[in-house]
Image 1 (cartoon, rainbow, N blue to C red):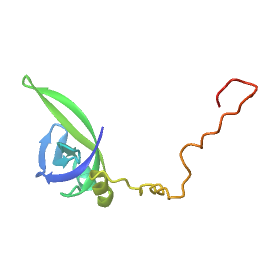
Image 2 (tube, helix red, strand yellow):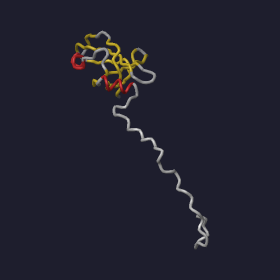
Image 3 (spheres, rainbow, N blue to C red):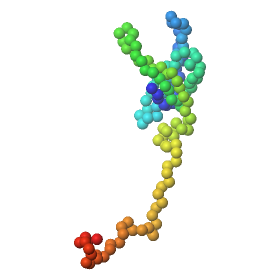
Image 4 (cartoon, rainbow, N blue to C red):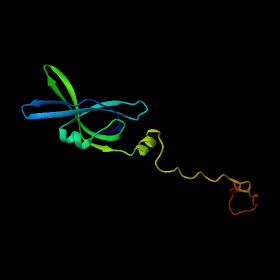
Length: 136
């Protein structure tokens, strides 16, 4: 899944030792630019990815992530892990947030002038003794 927004918080890194070895995780909070902005806290696991992504507060990003749930002592917990991030040009993100199209709007139609033709052709006089009986 992908979501676009602005990074509003970078939480302190967590680290520890497991059966597989040492681990590091960073948590970040992204806010969308919807009419009703939503916030998403996501994790980046691994010191190499944390350094590669180098996420900072205020950056506009598209975050690609996976959602998973796990059970621990009878309770369920969601896990949102980012596997890729792409930085966005701030000007383009601001224009998208304001609903402005990146391309200029088409030129407005030229207003009609006083010499514009009438919308309907003038009425034709009825022709007597025509081959058909139609009034026009």
